[in-house]
Length: 407
Ligand code: AMP
Image (tube, rainbow, N blue to C red; front, side, top):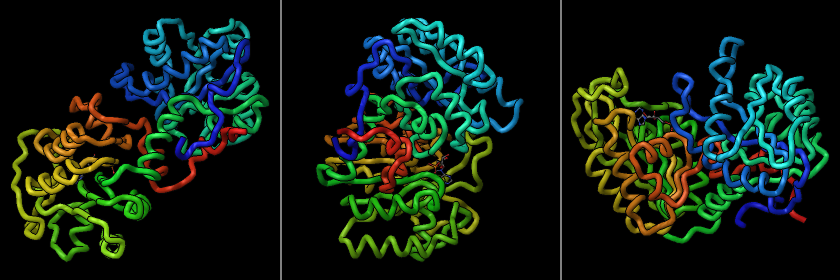
């Protein structure tokens, strides 16, 4: 398997053992209700396997950010336990515990039978979680014989529940099926792609994607840049970009990338026209916003580019049509607004129609593809935005590195 030489749940026998399984249940919630359960669904194959093998399955995850005590009630994992029970067709006991691994959780674990499933409270209830400290890592390890990491979405972070804990769980530390699948698709696309390989980057900031741009230029045949980050490139090409999002500190970097593409003989496709508005939509989904399409070198001083224009859509989707592998990360415009979502929708449609391996690298582009109903039309939609980006940068993910190597 490309990029992964780690032990997996297929390499261990968990019968009668306490299996601590780190999942990524960091799902969007509105008024205590889960609005998108893709990440829970993606975790099911590993959980089912551990149950079928007779393990005592103790699930854990983080959910959102917790800055103060007041944040905690709205960030409980209780709704996830409920949804998971429905999806599994089996009771998932929620081990409510303010310490995550405190007296309540320990009692729940002690009462488990083989094949039972419980879910611990949000690991970020413990402030040490994100610091990868020993105390919480040891607490987690004290209720586990075996550790399974299936949380791709947090694999780029070294926290107690995905990295620190492996220091203290004596039994094997392995990856789950979701982790394997994510690395397989992303790894094959980048290391061994069927060509032409087209990479598409979008989203708001160039700065967030510096290393990805450079690394992907080396691997792909064509690199397409859209979204807010494209205007820093437009400036690097010598154009005025009005009030569009620009990172002036990265203009030189963009020039370098344009040069690098030339030197390597790669296609670098940048927008040739833009949908512009007078100001950023407020509220963001204001559908009455007035728009005007202009060529990229004619953006008026008082307007901003908020989506790619029709000529750019032609250019970008044309490249996708002849591709055999496509990796996409980041929307082409302010897709949250229906009037400014055309570029993102057209690119998603082109991926859906392409006779190619199509991979969406999590985050906003995954949300856009899901929202627009293209979910079943892609080869793979990653559950991890930041993790997939770091993987595409060529970085080692600490959550993956912490698992045992295959013999
Ligand atoms: P990122 O988190 O970097 O993937 O950026 C996603 C965000 O970029 C979305 O919220 C989009 O609304 C925003 N975005 C995309 N295109 C533009 C643009 N041209 N100007 C400002 N924001 C944009």
